[in-house]
Length: 402
Length: 77
Image (cartoon, rainbow over all chains, first blue to last red; front, side, top):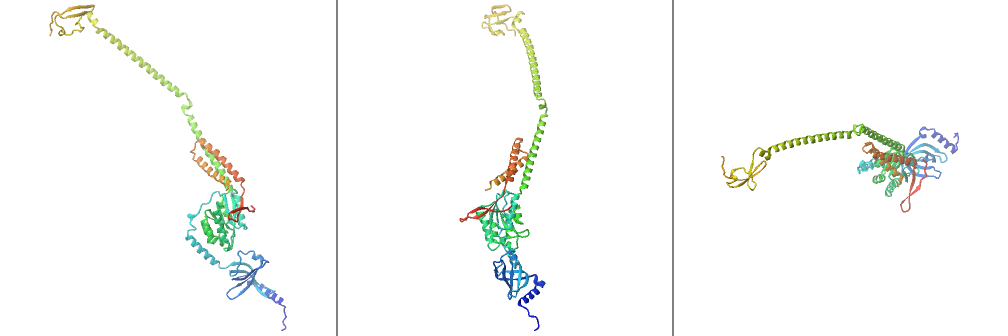
């Protein structure tokens, strides 16, 4: 009765002080389902969290709300972090929410594993289906948000490594309900109009919900059906999405995708220098070998004294000539001797010579030389030749000696 | 579509072929000299293409008939 009477404001402030002093209420996480969700033009978000039997009023101020990685909707199960305090004007306590996370991440993982299993069974991850990337892509299509940091990281790296390529950006939403359809459509569109030699599909890092579009089977099928090779570039290193499994190549990050997509200009320049060196070395080797062969040939006797060959042949010719001449002489001498011998032999055998020694020969009238008495008859005329003339005679009588 | 890149790609392929042939040492000296000349010219040409290159970035928009239209994409490198 004698107690001090407080104003409402004083009471509410008092209670607020009590709550604010409580360490648990100062940093608390609470699970519930969103309802009465409202976003005001001020940028502050107001909603309630409820479970089966109770409701908690929540507010999320603009600064925190801007960091939200998803768009909260009624019915969504979330975990809200923040502090519980009193809104003095209404005399109501509420949760001043600093961060919101989707609850039921476990369900997402289960869905991810189920889809992975299904697509794997359908052969979407088959290594044999993966296409090789072009070595020197002339045009690279980038399918991502045109607003994010990812696209700028990629452009910076592409420009640094291989500015010879052309980039075609196909802007899409990379998170939210529309994202999977847009990404899949962009892949199909790029294929239909043959907009690129190589596609990079992805986005920068984010929560598992942010990356969820890349775990959508529409995106998976679109990647699988693409005739343009695709590098998947979703999130950071540890994030692995279905897209990564289906793509022809998985990059850890968008920047990494840009590095994998093109050769490095500096390395190419070095490569060119190395090829220049290889060619020069090969040519020098060949020149040296040729020179050695030349020297070897030049040192041969025939090249040292080019007339030697002729002289040698000349000598051989001379020798042959001499042999020919002497052979000829010998033959002539031999023939001469034979001639002389023949002549003297002839001379000795000459019938005239014999006649001078007292021999004669008889012939019939027809000139037949008589060698037998049978060749003539008695009374026949014959001629008898002597060394100095002839006698005509008549055969008187025939007488056989034997 | 990207003529310089095509030239570069073809030149690189030809260069690799030339270097392989020369390193095998099977060509005649006269052929090797010719290859060396050709290779040196290709290397000079490739180097120049790389040096002069500038990244082209276009955003693809869709015309009412569905065909793609290229528009400049503002970007900082």
